[in-house]
Image (cartoon, rainbow, N blue to C red):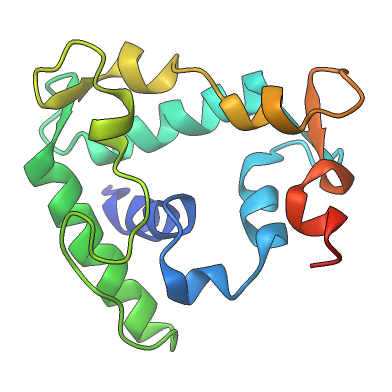
Length: 148
């Protein structure tokens, strides 16, 4: 059973394709809030990243390469278009926001190891956790504070 189509759609949401961004921060929040308790913890982000990494690592060699990400992005763009979200740009920066390899490739080898991606810090939690409880709630999201 192939999980690549599922992860292509998840990739689009996670890396903020403009078309999916219209769904608002709530949709992305729900992707991470696995237990539905209204808060995102480091453990939930780590678990989500682990599942994403497994799906993105097409050849199961323990690394996600540029080629694997580009293929996933192409699938995500196709899924977005098929779902009626309009045309999305393809390519490395092509409308997909952050580049996970550039963001998390600690050793500079041009690919992501599971540890580099799954165990990477989650800076949004530290930045927006206003009450210091170690979890990010919907009310702590910047869009919420601005009324969005």
